[in-house]
Length: 328
Ligand code: ADP
Ligand code: MG
Image 1 (cartoon, helix red, strand yellow):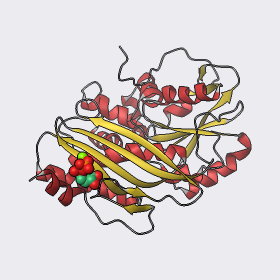
Image 2: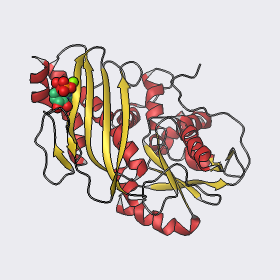
Image 3: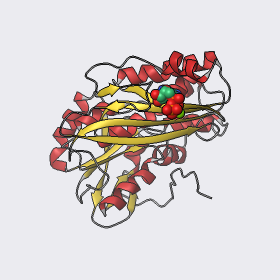
């Protein structure tokens, strides 16, 4: 099968009218038509075999994740997904693989009304690069720079399960089979919090998506906003879904492992955001409208730096580094 047949068979779909796309796959450019008064939100993420996923990962999961991590960036800005492009390097044409990959990718795309409008296809080591386009009313995007002293710090969903799965798959911890399956689903098919991001417009003072680990990613908000923070470590530890499957199973994990996974795990694709205490009701309503749980895990302080406290309010030492591809 040649390049053009492959594109036609797996990656070409009719464009839905009224979805913000005037022209999709097939010409030299796609044409996007954001509504008047909207800004385009654009983000790009690359997934490289051996770096971001194992060679033997289920291709349907890989297709899902490649788009999910990009939709997560739109969610963090409070943008509504419109369209995406797909740049794909493939070592060979494996139709079963392509069918599953396209299936996982386009299923998630359809869930979010996000059209595949173009891309590039080449031979080479497996590499997937997606660029997403979303729209947000001008001036209303959620940014990293708006956190203010006194704001609450919130996080959506669950944290740490993806990291727990990775630790287990690489043989560093033992996890019961049912728990591993659930944790692995969080690693391989994360849920982008698009609905929550949209609901938080006008409520959150800052937001980002947690991709490299909570503390490291929060550091981006603190730097961009020129503030510090205090984090309730024991509240964060509770956010790992794996521990909730069975209270008896919690004994499998020591406190330190739970802290590592939840504070510095990475690959969670949850939203971390700040909002003034006066908006707690509004945050709760936003979370309910988005059917996404949220938890309050700390507060923004004027003093710079990140202070970790336990349930008794005692300061904790310890470095919980987040993931950095170039860290030595
Ligand atoms: P060009 O030579 O102008 O870059 P290509 O021959 O690479 O165009 O691609 C032909 C058409 O197919 C273009 O509209 C391009 O956006 C689209 N396309 C190529 N690869 C993909 C892909 N993996 N997914 C979706 N569309 C693709
Ligand atoms: Mg091309």
